[in-house]
Length: 409
Image (tube, rainbow, N blue to C red; front, side, top):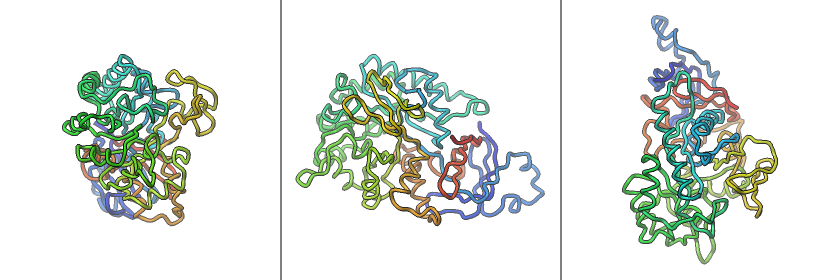
């Protein structure tokens, strides 16, 4: 089921236009009506049935689809690799506080036994959510699993454990997918190690997204992999072959091919502000996907921690392992959109409708299109009432999940 809610006096961001002053009628957790003007003026006083529904006056603020994060490992001391139902629950609940209403639980490279256990427990949680009571247990939807590793390149392993990296294998993937009860929806892979692109072909045949990442691939590798179903690039620019004037690499291919989506960590650390701005200027916004790549240390105080068996130092917004390499992020999705806006010198005092549409695409609708989720990522009749309420400065005020109001962090 879901909640019943009237959101009135709001600026509504649709896929291709913005309603300056409108309303949303939400019934049983679904958007029932998208309208212009004042709700009760349009419905007239005779519609007394609506007066029993919870009412939210948005006071002219912005409503757009809830954020969808396809790359998060955890937060606030809880990680997907904990292989724990309780960690899955806490991650799902706390993601709402940053406006994320749906996400892919993202794994890390580990032993076969550890990884299959994590996949089994995570899929058990996803199954249990089909029977949860939305009235008492409001949480972001774990819409599937992102398998980040083990099918990657040791040369660009980053924080991933080199010991357990494997060559891409259809048979091994099938075992992982069996443990995951079919919930793996997205796989990070080094295409240059996928002989004959057999795994990429298999993933494509099963409508699973193959994403190039932790990869030393050459431009031609990405070009060929794309013909066999490669759709995306994992944390673009990070842990992949760079753009060089004699070899364009993963980065050059990501910028060149219009139909490859680009995950981006907009924290100003993983990618410089200037690089974010250059990318936004060069490529179609419909291929950019904002992610957090957040670890369980997000929301924790500064200090030295053991993270997945490695010592990691958290200092402000930076996570560094003993070798001095970045070890994921502590980014929140609501911070990512503010950063992106700042990096691109967008004037928040007079933010355009076009830019609001683009931000909504990069945080939500692009993902929904990539993963083929028709009921999410847009504000339209019969879609899930998963929304965020932002003020004119793009600060997150409220999250709305299945028609229920959740306070922001």
